[in-house]
Every structure is written in structure tokens, then in C-alpha cells.
Image (cartoon, rainbow, N blue to C red):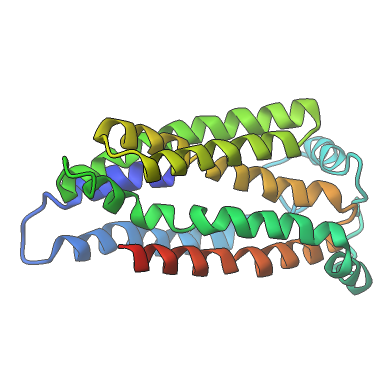
Length: 243
């Protein structure tokens, strides 16, 4: 959703004429509220369920019950990070499989927000301002796809098939863009390519499901981030070389 309204916002800001360059205005409009909200989050975002002031004691019990389903959770006694379980998460083979999947998805996932307007403008039918505006609809569709697939995967208690479906849809979009030259077809393919975002959302929740404790999940997410975040380096560099 952020990419959807970000593209539309960028389109509007590029139409502003003044003493500041449009890209500087873009940084100010998008950056200053973010910095201000960080201070709000520091003071008002709770550290956990038990410290959430907007929940009653009964609501806290219910929330902890749902979080602890099929997993071990410290309820009523915060025990902090258990380093033994963190190490188990770091060495568990199940931590590396999602990490490799995350790496593959991130090759395209992390570079897409940077280059979608460029890809659209290089189709030959749109200017740079139009390209920013046209980058919003694919992300808007993807937002609803993410919500739908995450809901279905929770309902059926399966992550893998839905994760693979989203990744395959994204791959089909990339193949169409690489093999077709018609503007309409290539723009339609962007709607498919961005579905790789749905696969990433499912991978992030999958890691939480395959580790039984909070501390072990910390180790699993460390492996996921370490391996997966190498994908953007490769994806962005390859895209820059291509453009």
C-alpha cells in the first residue's frame, strides 16, 4: 500500500513548480512526517501484549492465548532472551530454507519499488510523471492479494503452496516483460510481477510458525534477514547494469 500511494504522491509532487527541485520536496513531504511519527511510536508503541495500556486484563489474556497457539510463550512472566534457544534457531536447518527462498524473492522484491517507474517509462508510451502515477495500480492490487493469500494460508494452515503461487505469478510477469514488446501487455505483466510481495509476506510469517519459542524465532529471523538481504544487493546491481 505504501508503494501504491507513494507512486501517486510522487506523480503529484513532480507537478509542483517552485524554488526547490521536485525530488527535494518529495523527500521533505515523505521524510518529515516519518521522523515525527518515530517519536510518537517511541513513547506510545507498547513493547508487548502485557504492556499494552489500551487492552484490558481479559483482552491481554485472549491475545496471549492466540499468540501462544502451537508455540511456547512466556505468559505472565517475562524471561527475556534465551541465548540457548537463539543459537538453536541459528543452527536449525529449517531456518536456512526460508532464508534461501527470501533471497530469491528479494532479488526482484527489493529492486521493484526503485525501478517500476523506470520500467514503465521505458515502454515508450509514457513520460516520467505518468510512469510514477501508473506504478500505483499494480501495488494497490497486490495489497489486496497479500491480505487474501495471508487469510487463506491462515485458514488452511499452510504457507508453502500460497508462497509458491505468489512467487510463480511474479515469475510469469517477469517472463512476459522480457519476451513481449507491446506496451499494454508489458504493463499488465507488472501487475503480475509485483505479486512477489505476497510471497515475501508469507515467508515472514512462515518463519514465526516453524519455531516454537520467541527466542528461537529471533535466531530464525536473524538467519532469514542475513541471507535474504543479500538479494537486494544482487537484484539492484543487476537492474542498474541493465538500465
